[in-house]
Length: 291
Image (cartoon, rainbow, N blue to C red):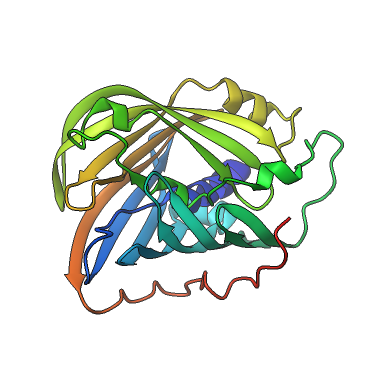
């Protein structure tokens, strides 16, 4: 339970994404609160604040376990990402995440240029394991960080809820491991949550590990074979972008869910207020020579 709960905090932070109008001369800020649950039991909450100026974006997030999960693990974390919006995918420039439990803490800071990982700092470093698949130089090219990965520009030229907008492969590098997140269309639903009412695309999701993962771990094998992962994408009409309203993942002890319980969009000339104890993505790392 302790490991699962702690991992879910990291999952929530990595999974938080947002969308905004790239053409707007004014800032657009999306604020979302997500409820986290595991096997039907409340696990905690995650808060997101994202600001966009033209094609540039900045995201800040925090997550904290509550109740029994908090007592057992003390799990919490903060994360941030920044970059600019490309035609089909975000172009990350910086990513940082700090996750902690009652026993330990780990931080990951990463700088990117043009889709290439320039430098990574992990503190404390990951312990060497014989079953860890080595990360190659080519695995750090053409990638996005895990927060920016859920900014999904529309691929189809027709309606935002065109099923084709589900069908994409997202190349993700989280600072230690490279994976593909493969989405495919499942169905279209109508939903209503505070701040949003309308259609969502329900996309099936596959986890495809490339490198950096521990190939012999039961959890890795479970996720690689997992056919019970889905993301619900809500449309944002102006910028033709989609963002996650809900993420559901089957774990080894039950279904984990991240469900939006509050959603609001603000447009003004002022930047969004940083989340409390936010990690600053822009100052997270000084990028060195591209590897």
